[in-house]
Image 1 (spheres, rainbow, N blue to C red):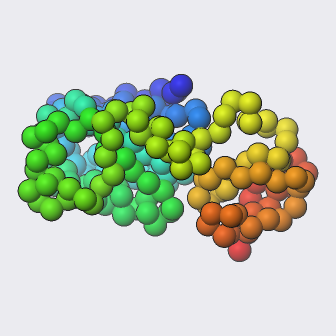
Image 2: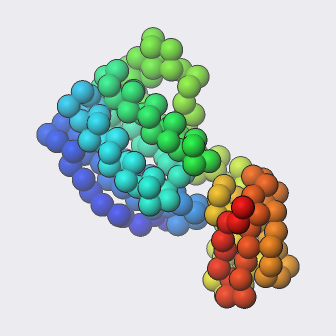
Length: 184
């Protein structure tokens, strides 16, 4: 399930539908339509960076309706990925048309990004990597199942207190109300 956050028209050649993914903490699907080129790559980058600044660090870019991408567009994607990696996030490109993928290959970016065929496949990969919570595991009143505020991986605790994330090794504190905080 997703929740629509916005439909945004960058310019006459590009629009983006942004959806929050319920089962993956701090995640978005960006459904891109049109082309990513010199005229819209940087406004697109600014828009995505504003979501990253709000804490969305697990991104799925649905490129099914992208019919062209320029080197500026690829540069924007590299910048997005670099920002996400600095925040322990990830980005997956899905639905790339063959001619767009061929350009990535030609410019040496074939192995630079993660790819999936569909949004559903990308969500499945996130779940396989322990980013998804099952509906029955989500309990707002209990600190027993929570997400690490640094790496967003699912964790379990028997009580409130301080713990070390088993994935990123940061110290996590859970207060009596079930609020989760990262500590240094």
